[in-house]
Image (cartoon, rainbow, N blue to C red; front, side, top):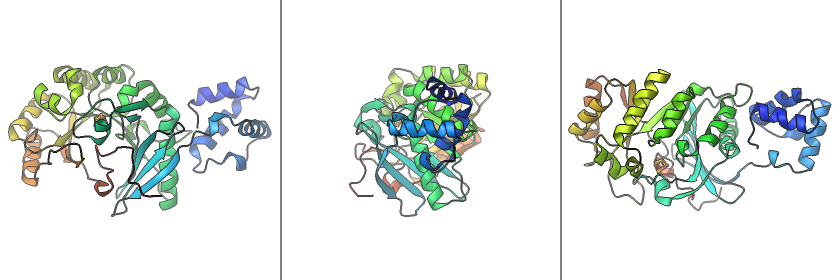
Length: 351
Ligand code: SF4
């Protein structure tokens, strides 16, 4: 795996004296084919010679596939969590989720996370490093290979950046990875089927708007006042709620796109009717969809999820205020693959 887009591939070939017109065939072999075994591809002779020579020289280009340490399946068989080891020994997690009409892969963008959300296992473990673009792309390729094995008639069409890490804290690498992933001549997951989830990194949201990126944006809010939010999401001290909402408002105006607001419901902390009413007032005028997430258990946080009645009341208030508001389908809780449960440690079971 390498970290170059199509232009980069052309440049690499040209630098090695190969006509860059072969870049399309190389890109297809690397990204479009399920089996990226380059030795059996029917390349034209100049590209074949270059590939053979490059593999012989062990160009890092082809060798950056993470090692699968462990694969855990949920009891219902719909979710698979992969623990992957990167070249320097760091481990990350990737989750493949099956729904009636689609499969979605959830990838990590960092090893660990610096944002420290109190209810999140990744945040509880601290930050280790940013992932490189190739390490992000490799997770999608891995999930696609597995999907091809279990459901050959299905294509991987949806991607969410909601695994370990804060994507907008690793902006450049994430954008480079996404341009490879959404490239129609490569993996080909359309930008509108890619969701970037942020906990509220305001400069990143503004940059997405300025650069007119056509990915979906999901903002984890979790609090309707600065105080309520800062108690759950420490990054709110750096980018206060008011600044975040202003950035979201501008994002909506500039891009014309709907924003998904994620809300983890925690009993007694952010699930009261008064909070729901404040949230509705806060988002007034924004094209918003609110996703309610029942709190998933982690060992480092003692809070409990809202009960069914409280959660439904919360939803009703938002709907009555005119917002689409849905519950996120829960996936993979028994294998610690749900939202906020990824730790990068696996279960100790062998693959
Ligand atoms: S919820 Fe997301 S941003 Fe917050 S600590 Fe976990 S991985 Fe990081």
